[in-house]
Amino acid sequence: MGEESMCTKNQNPFEQTVEEQLAALRRQNKLGSWGIEESVFARLAKTAPEWPEGRDAYRSFRIRFGEGRDGVIKTFEAHVNAVKHTHDNFWRWNGLLSGEHPFLGKQIDRLRLLAGNGSHAPMIEWIIIPDLSANLGHGSINSVRGVKSLADAGLVVIWLVPDRVRAIDYKEWCAWFLAGYEVNEPRDYVQWWTSVPCVQYSPHTGTGLQTWLRCYPNPGFAAPSGI
Image (cartoon, rainbow, N blue to C red; front, top):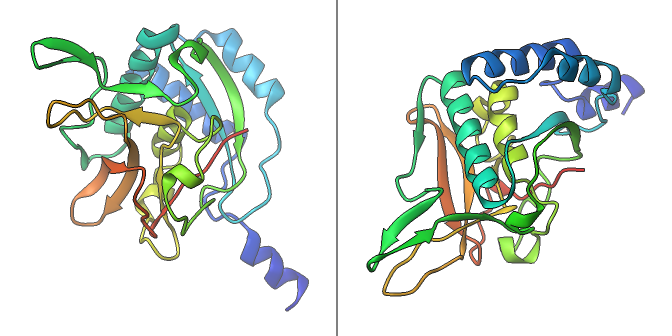
């Protein structure tokens, strides 16, 4: 195989310029009233890393609002709204909730970070996702997840690189878990922090956010991390 063929094989067809990515961030900043100041855009423009090598590697953003538990909720909902602004045909499973919700006469949390909500702090920075297809074909999410598994940064990819989502066919281009989150799906008088959100797509139903039990394998989904 020639050098040119190897380059084509390993080239990411969804690669973006820094200018394109900052323009996408500006759009969401305006639509979501995020309040990101011009000085932040200037800093990002100066500190942008090179686009990483790899067929499914990405330069992206980690954008978090607020501190701790309340910040986790605010950030999650901000990015879900950004996804709505980007994908016309978007759905979210009604069991994928954030914040407090009633269960057996009391309020319980439904979403948290695997790394702990105390690790959540406001930030806007570049991150690298070395391989969005990482851990594809894993035995279960439990066996491959860790504190660097994508959480809100995995939501950013949905609105930042929408064509990658629309390319999902579960064969050539996989879907992915947001394994840096844990979802509480209470049932049978027990609170279960046993699920994670996942990003999926179908040409019939559009872009969706669902949950999956982390003890079960799913061969069409990856469990990527960010650095």
